[in-house]
Length: 280
Ligand SMILES: CCCC/C=C\CC(=O)SCCNC(=O)CCNC(=O)[C@H](O)C(C)(C)COP(=O)(O)OP(=O)(O)OC[C@H]1O[C@@H](n2cnc3c(N)ncnc32)[C@H](O)[C@@H]1OP(=O)(O)O
Image: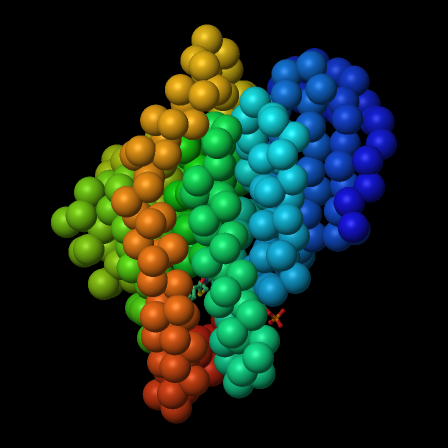
């Protein structure tokens, strides 16, 4: 349930009156009434990994902002986590899964990707920490990426866990850095430092600090002030529709592929080892 009330919010370098929508936990969303820009903050310690519940919240929030006709959105992580934007999909959702929950999770993941990838308003991810697997995916869904650096990493590292990034994960990356670079990147489960990500075009700008990264994000959104929202929406739709349409047309097939391979003994073994290595 989302509550709505008025607060004073720090935004760029001004104090402004804002309208705030707050979810119970895991996701905070604020809309600056003056600028129409929403800031959506993921807040699920310790590493913002994406559980079914968080997925639902992200999807619900994006759909809500869509109806609110906002002018743009910044997606970022709560600052108190300090070094993580998003640790990726919650591996525990895949390890020894309950089949009903796994099916729900995968369906929700498809729907959330579609919502975030196809927003009719401009979006920026301010990547203020590591952004791996599903974390890289949600950052890549945005129209623009500003990554804090130099010490963080980003990438689709699924093969390192012994799992397969679906076609739409790979296509999302290929649309940003080109097919060849994306292919080399996903098959090796490669992760990039901020500087490397900037060099290959996986992120658009880098910044040594979060405030500056946020400002750059706002600047990008402000660059659309003179662009008609309708022209923006239609143009983005034409650009992204071929990738999203594949998923819309192949949802069941895509779901069954992941649902089945995820539960095979060899994949389960890999996931178990990976989880163990994280605990070390
Ligand atoms: C559609 C199906 C195909 C796609 C399938 C999967 C896509 C994915 O997204 S898979 C996940 C990809 N992500 C990762 O590989 C990141 C793994 N995490 C890390 O590398 C580090 O945790 C990170 C650099 C993000 C942060 O490092 P630290 O600050 O040092 O934290 P810890 O490593 O100590 O982690 C704290 C705590 O969180 C648990 N954890 C971390 N990541 C995940 C995760 N993705 N899922 C579940 N749990 C995670 C980690 O095990 C620690 O747990 P405890 O030891 O119990 O505290």
